[in-house]
Length: 218
Length: 218
DNA sequence: CAAGCTATCAAGAGATCAATTGAATGGCAA
DNA sequence: TTGCCATTCAATTGATCTCTTGATAGCTTG
Image (cartoon, rainbow over all chains, first blue to last red):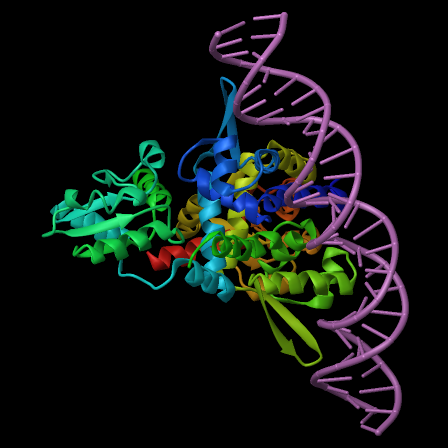
């Protein structure tokens, strides 16, 4: 009983989950699913790959227990498999930033110049005070799937034309998918160009959601 | 600026870390390093693979920022790269258990019949009361590299011959490398065969160490 | 039940990875 | 210096992964 054979089987089983995180495409899918459940075709379109390939990657994620799927008529909607999967993905992402300079560099290249940020705790306090306007600049479907309480949805595409909706005398905080999502950066730049005092939330909806849950748990 | 090209580069960089967790061999190395820093040749011997192969995997882990290395005379000692790497590995391991029935099955096959366990909080309380004997059944080097305060080292190999050191009138708690390490299970079975009232700690030194640190941080 | 759409399957080409082997490097000690 | 040992490098083979293409299956609607 219990020899190297069994131990290897154990590590192999764990590596099944590790493999799920070994492909950039799959990570992009996870990142999207962290915002909202989506159909295969949507994921394919948004992530810019073929439907067949997307389906295969989703199946790999499913085999690793990281996503769940549900038929909806003629299509299939995939979701992140619970809080566990979300926090694992966020942990991997954060660890990769702090351990690999490469990631930080890639992030800078993608996000452009840094803009002023505010962290979750500070935002919570300011929301209690009621002296900020909180704007969710993600696509409307993602807002609908879940958002920070008190936020108003103004997708980044509509920001310029709806600028008038935002008061000029209060600070505006924009948030989006997370620390490596360009929407909030963009939004802040455009808001400032529009004469608003604006900052971005340091991270995004998934992180907010997760800390809310763990706060409730504690 | 900032297009699909840059976004892909970002996910690719994160996937570098993901790849580190995609091989069972590398996971075994991480698991060993979570106990104590070790030289390449030791790791090769303990994990039962060739030195060259071990070296290659360690370099992969190094490239992913999960381990650090230090020359020591003619040899090289590898260590886990900080708390971040440890907690990521533990998170992956735990998530794989809760999301994949396969992992749990493999664990049962390897560990054999379940034995009574005690969790960290309960152990902490019992240690304060002083009514348990805590035994670290890992190899002595791992004990030396770090152990639970108040534990005594009795490597599993020496357990039978040193049974007399353990009082028969107090409960004995054995711990080892973690929830999937067979040592504590074995130890409890042998202790019971030796007439002791014994349980195992639910997890092991790495988990204890990590919660100690986060407690201190909070 | 036929058409149309979505998702999955199946097969294959090309790339990447894993492990082995044998040679090279770097530090240590005689 | 020379020899020795631990580690790394380099090259190779076979296995695995990724993406594409074209076919298939499942559901819905006319």
